Length: 98
Image 1 (spheres, rainbow, N blue to C red):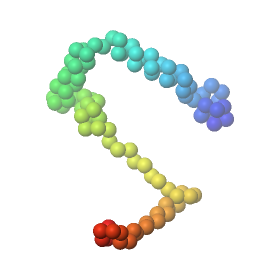
Image 2 (cartoon, rainbow, N blue to C red; image 1 turned 120 degrees about the horizontal axis):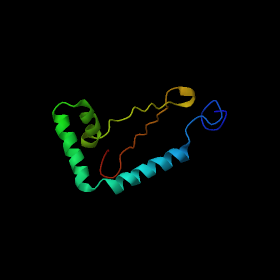
Image 3 (cartoon, rainbow, N blue to C red; image 1 turned 180 degrees about the horizontal axis):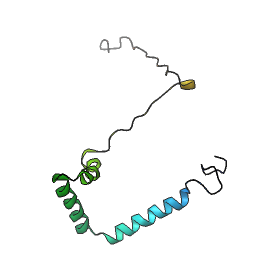
């Protein structure tokens, strides 16, 4: 990260502002260009294609229908070792044990 952008040479790496501006511009363009009826048609075509065995259509629809698959997250303690977990048992309170 010698240049502050994550790349090894000057100017290399992702330019967050430019990428986010472009993404926002494309989102606005889509919202202005594709009306609700067209969007419904696109989704219905994707459903029809997925039901006919189109793997790309299934891949595109899957996260919308079933939710995105969970991402694996690995949690480690100091120095990459195990995480210390301390359990505390609460003894009897009014009304009996928990």
